[in-house]
Image (tube, rainbow, N blue to C red):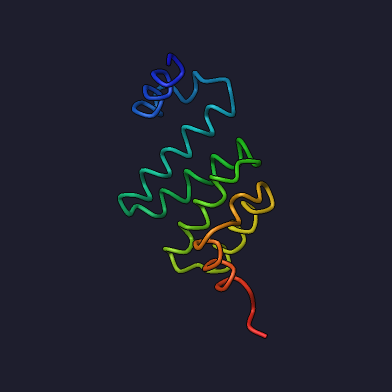
Length: 112
């Protein structure tokens, strides 16, 4: 439970604790959560920046790659969206299941 409380504090004060957090994976989580908040309120450019920073710190995180793809989709940057959705699938194939991925695949597969 202590980890959750610490993480909550980090999310509320990411700028203050960013430099004090030596663990890159934890900093990546903070940035991913910031990106999710920005995405939720429609601040798409800030969401892109936060998700990109998260991926620099933890390039093996499929959730961040997927959310970055979704953000690019909302910005109507389809090629970039497909790139990050595919990256998420390569990192963990569980991100390639379900109706949402079926829709992504249709969008990202060139017409024959």
